[in-house]
Image (cartoon, rainbow, N blue to C red; front, side, top):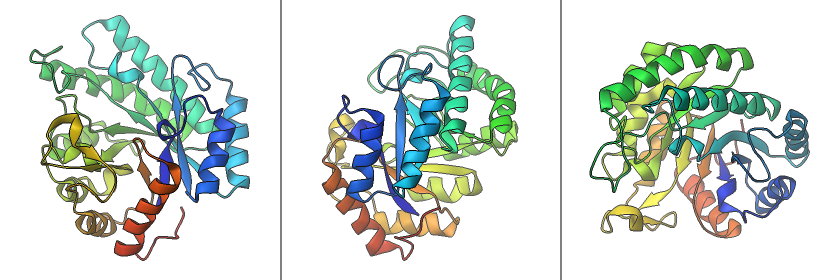
Length: 279
């Protein structure tokens, strides 16, 4: 396991090449780049730019661990309109192409949004979201396999896939080595325990986001700096080691790079003798 950071933690006006350099200087082993419909990296950015970023990262001793986007909060596989579902699938393929060029290995996907945490009414029926997600992944698995990139489904506050057993069942039904889970440790603490998710997901765990969450402050106000919340990091690291997870632990959230790196390094050093391992 090794420390990585999501590009949302960096100034948003920082060019991607400078993001990579800043992460390397701070001592991280990897970076999760972010795509937007507009911005320095988009779904239309040339593949050659991602190849160049991967080469730059390798020369600095870091890796591009994955690609993320907030696009799927707006348009996703569970949407009621078929045109929106088709657009989400098209954007997924574009992400897969760019992840392959960046040698990233995985993309982060929010597959459906039944509703946000503060929405009293559902956007779509849960069963419809689940069936549409399954159908989309049955098709997209072949695109992912062709490119050797994992579609990693993240647990977020979208009132969907709220149990690790549901995630396990969905992934196993799709039955592809390139459809797996992206666990966000902080997100899950509001309604479960990350060690349960880790142990149940097991081999299906492709990537991990590390955030902390203070249960004394419900809602979005509960997110806090690493080590200051309710996450039992010894239990989390022990569970990750139990299932032989050896990938990046990627911080996602606000903060100064040096402080984030120090906090994450401390968690690794205190709980895991693999702190220096990079895969």
